[in-house]
Image (tube, rainbow, N blue to C red; front, side):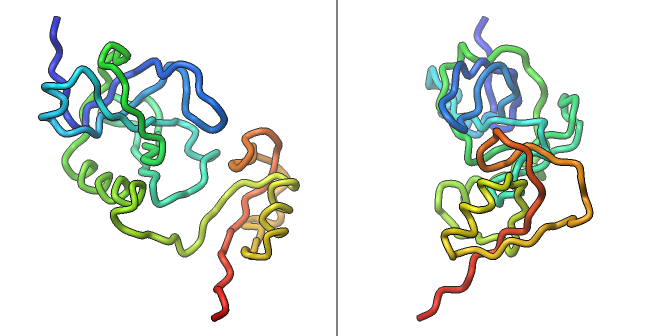
Length: 176
């Protein structure tokens, strides 16, 4: 059966094994390719979707979706995790995003591919001690604990391995 794929459709897809920080495995994806390409090409361009909304850094390339449009959990569309995949990797249809979401996702996509520049005022990241020291060590960033009284630890956003705390990461201004 020939399916019709549209920009804004969400499917479960098998992305296979990833390397490093690449999104992998059986997971939701969002089709971001235009409908002409979707109609004529054997491949589609997708963005990975993650339900780990608290474990991910708040980046300008991320777009938060509520548990709606077929998604069971609140999720982040990771517009920096783009892949071209064969349509045969697309399995279960999840749902379609409304136009308001697609318009906002266009901005995150434009930031991701460098069409517009967006520097976040403050980037919040969970960092383990080793990764926090790496940021300090460059001399380019200020780090401030977001909740200094918090004892519960999350997994480090940067390395994805060790437990850490939420930090506000601010790039120091360059001297001329």
